[in-house]
Image (cartoon, rainbow, N blue to C red; front, side, top):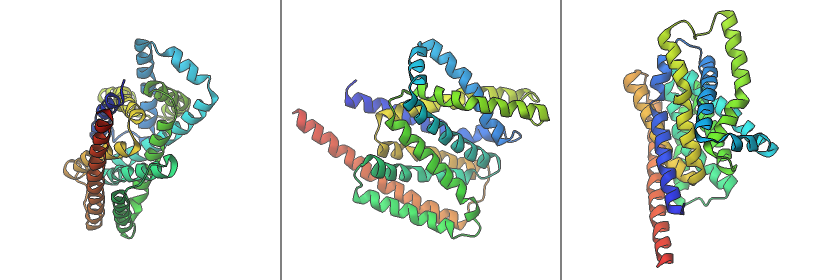
Amino acid sequence: MDEHARARAGLLFGLGAYLSWGVLPLYFKALSNVLASEIVAQRLLWSLIFLAALLTLWKRWSSLKAILLNPRLMAALATTAVLIAINWLVYIWAVVNGHALAGSLGYYLNPLVNVLLGVVLLREKLTKAQIVAITLGAIGVLVLATSSGAVQHLWISLSVAVSFGLYGYVRKIIPVDAIEGLTVETLLLSPFALAYVLWLQQLGQSGFGRDTTIDVLLILGGAITATPMLFFGAAARRLRLTTIGLLQYISPSLQFLIAVFIFGEALTLPHLICFGFIWTALAVFAVDSARTGRAAARERAAAQA
């Protein structure tokens, strides 16, 4: 696959991932009577079953075995497993407890985190426009941080942004395909998830087994969880971190609209100011990325002429 086809495939995978994540709050809100920690645990267990079926269908068990026997890859995937578990737990807790707006802010910040990680860890060059975008984003966060009414939920936004930014960075630099990587992450976390679910069952506090609709939703969580994660893993291997950051705003935009217009969460003045700065930062970032992409395309065309 040439570089252009690889980037195009990565773009499609990225769009699929972020559009799916954008509407996830509706799914989590339907499970608001279930503990956020159990939703995460159930997602892991049903995802493992779903992934095992895909590995069988696609005949990828041998490649999974090779990863399991590689200590370096296993260490890296253990790190990403912890990062994605933190991200899921914080975000799901936020949605089911009426703080989807704070969660969407976290994913709005994530593109800027990706740019910073790309510069610091991958030595990607920072343009003047990206410096402006990061500065505007920082001002927006500072406004929210100094607001007595909103600062108490800022930890949600920062935890979501940093955990997913680091997850994307590590997944980008390790030579593991999407399905094998997600399977290993899920496999590492599943023993803890199973023990937790069994403990909740013993205490009579589990949400599973009480209502047919809830049970079906939890079971579907395997496919709902794994599919966009597979898309994201495939996109991360094919795209620059800055491009991933550009796509990232699709998801929080949908989450923001759902939080305000469907869930009816309060949109305060500090929120509006903060989001205003971040939206402006993302607009600057998007224009700069588009201009840079066009310039790179012209250079490739000239080199091939």
